[in-house]
Length: 293
Image 1 (cartoon, rainbow, N blue to C red):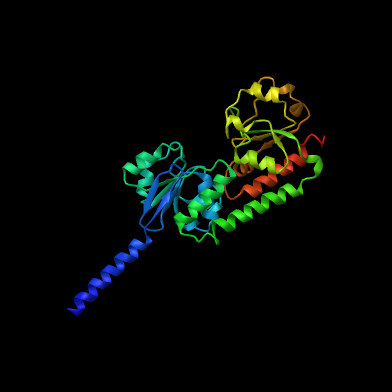
Image 2: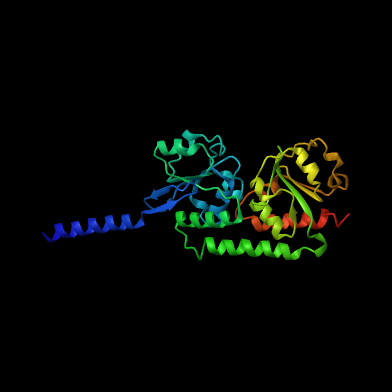
């Protein structure tokens, strides 16, 4: 009888232990995702989330990434499972992930969940979002906040502040247009890029009312007539000018920064490299700004 009771007690203890590890996460869709334990096999379909997992020192848990995840270098050796918009569902399922990290706007969520795959959807657009996403990822990964998300956010914030303080007064108060990608798709005041520009003392010509990343009519930029233009050009295709842009003072005076693939990846991803993004943008403001002909 004693042996039976002991075995029953052991079984209850193991059950309690496993239940104690189970926890719920509320993701960016507002959905509650129940996880039996901190995931050990993770697929990430968004580069900023891939970078954040690694910045929280949990890169070893990644078993697959989207085709655009390329930092840190270690993730380039992982299986690629398509893009965030067109992921290879079969390839993802074959990796047997405990959880898939993807953007809120991804259409893969429902398909993966229908196949029994746990999904956590997160999509940072502002700096507050980045901080919140880091905190959520820390919970998912079971990394203590003081060692993980909070520490990382303090480092990011301090780095951005240092970049702002490095700028000479003459480089401040410039009216800036930031093009994220051809369209033109712009970074508005409400985006994390717009917030970085504001912290660097620049004025964004795309107001918050238009949304974080609006698609604009090229004529809008002509009317806005910015002092400085920043362009993310990840593809490094020849920059075909938009109608009327040749008349812009910023274009005539060569007050334009075209960021190549590596720098574009840094400046357009809302994640742990935002301090580096601030330094890149500060350098543009100082070197190409209207106060520096």
